[in-house]
Image: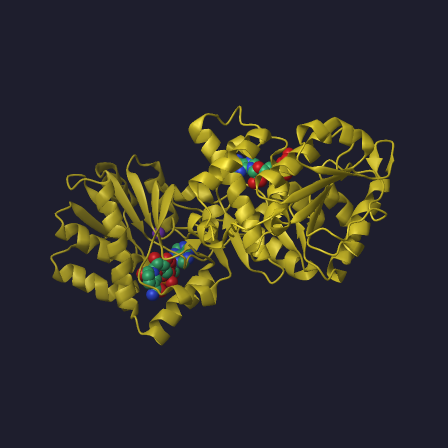
Length: 509
Ligand SMILES: NC(=O)C1=CN([C@@H]2O[C@H](COP(=O)(O)OP(=O)(O)OC[C@H]3O[C@@H](n4cnc5c(N)ncnc54)[C@H](O)[C@@H]3O)[C@@H](O)[C@H]2O)[C@@H](O)CC1
Ligand SMILES: Nc1ncnc2c1ncn2[C@@H]1O[C@H](COP(=O)(O)OP(=O)(O)O)[C@@H](O)[C@H]1O
Ligand SMILES: [K+]
């Protein structure tokens, strides 16, 4: 599934029409038919339907839907909310076809009449405005939207709830509140944003015949799905030995936060790392060694229970290093992150307190020759950017892409929809997981899984997407099988990793 801005969608449509030769009328027919098929599954023929139609191509889709429903025997009324002369091009073509098939169209301006109509129908199909919306809805459309939103009818939007912007980062709008939205061809950014997602109601993408490569050439954003995990997760060779699956080091922990290191270490081993060492203070080692007997330990210098350095120890023979969890935010500890940024000769993942230390030395990111990965939650990402969390969440694709490109870093921005970004600006959204994960320690588990994935034979970007997939799916399976959103613990997510591998078996060579 691809994720697009309005401009990207228009480019995709234009290319399909002008270069491939699938005419706009045909795409509109496909769109209207695809939506109708879904509508027919949702509503009965006896339920009166009113289709509201606006001036653009979204309205054109509405005329196709009206024709298909009329033909199937549905009780369809069509209300045009703009005068006849505004209906042009492909939309006018499909309006004429609808009328030729016996359809009737009424242009209504009287808001009382519209209110009466809406009160009498069971279903409203909203084909007023699609991705072409500019600014806040003008009157009388704004009032019509208000009437529809106040009615008891089930509201089904075509492509996008009318009035809602397709792109992230647009603050001011008025919108239809849909119960269902059938999104045409590709997901729009706004369907994932905290402030806009709910307007869609339940939503689903309907394909309209645009070839895959056209999406690939026009957008760098997509959803990471089960099939992607299945295709990219590396096999475990029958002749494998522990060195085949990576030797990782996790540096973190302090006297007050020993558990986070234990969980990350355990998660890394459970997710498939061959060897994992935990680098921390002597005291923390004595606290956690029994929790994770499979790991090895590296004693690091400390002051008052906090790590103060790491490069005096042998860090050169690891395939990947993670730093930051449970590290603490003391100034003496900052040096640990600086040492690793300077010297880690392998992919370096920075999480949690490590990100606070990174803020003071961001310029070092560009100097690294090996990849760096950061795994912030929105609070940490906003801190790194120097903006508010709400600003970040209004346009997360934009902010993370700019930061990743400017600092040559991979980012996992965690949340309900986690966004993974490469230094080139490629972006994937990974949406598994559930509110049970909103609990301390689950981020540490993701760090461990990510470290394990970074050391397997797969592209780094895919590795990070797969780590998020394993983490979220593990939580989902635990909730399906035994736990609830209340009692899911980070350690349960570690246990669930086995279930993910069982449910989605990896290839074996
Ligand atoms: N070939 C294509 O481009 C295809 C487009 N499709 C549909 O076409 C839609 C996009 O069509 P358009 O580009 O014609 O745009 P829309 O139909 O989304 O909206 C444009 C119309 O809305 C009016 N409008 C915009 N902002 C307004 C505001 N604030 N208040 C009141 N009126 C406002 C404009 O004056 C214009 O008449 C998609 O969402 C999708 O439903 C599909 O039919 C598939 C093929
Ligand atoms: N409501 C939610 N739905 C899905 N995933 C969630 C939700 N809340 C949290 N998560 C996931 O849980 C993890 C929390 O990480 P983080 O905030 O760093 O936790 P901590 O540092 O306390 O371990 C992230 O992977 C995030 O994507
Ligand atoms: K619409």
